[in-house]
Image (tube, rainbow, N blue to C red; front, side, top):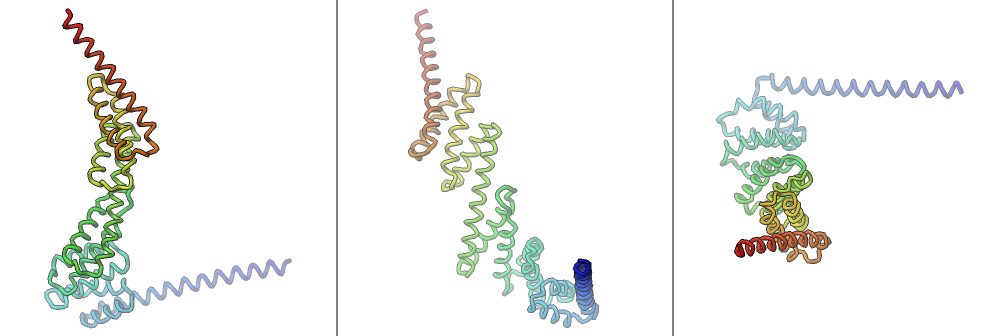
Length: 293
């Protein structure tokens, strides 16, 4: 028993020692690596720094390559090598999946070097960055809109590009994300009882995205929101709002006659017609009474 415990303790101790050695070795490697980069930067030889940066780039060591590209960038301003250096530095950020930094560098590149042989690839990466940064539909979609603009501009400028099929798929994904967001916004108004705002939001979403996968739900919630808005309105506004609700109902019925919502909506439509018939009879009775007097 004591032998087993001692053996276990020895194993744990050795495991910890090996762990410490591994960490120490890693720290040393990083220190040596950083020291090497610093020596290159401090060498005062920009050509040597540039060559080393290219070697690191070719080896897939994007972060180190970027550090060197940035260190010697000011030396090559105004020279034929300036655009190459700027492009490869931006591409390092892109390869590291630092989409925000890459997009800024690529935007600067495409504005400054519009005639560079790298311009098409730079603009393709720029559009790709925004696609990667675009969030899911639950968050603000400003970046999604920017991604659509960037991709659309690329496709317009380079219609023969090999990337066109990929970018078309990206546009479909982004468009669906915007559709989802518009539906979620409208549905939120519905859930919190802001029926007038919900009606406007659902109708705008349907107008903007007529082929949305949520088309039936949006038209359904438009009818329900219209019914609830009319039912909870002051008497002077009820007639017009019930008429508007019936208009939405008949549009829904015409487009989705087999919908599972039909029975529920028929009940609402019947209530709306009953209200309108009742008020019409009341108005007719009042008119006859006035004539008789």
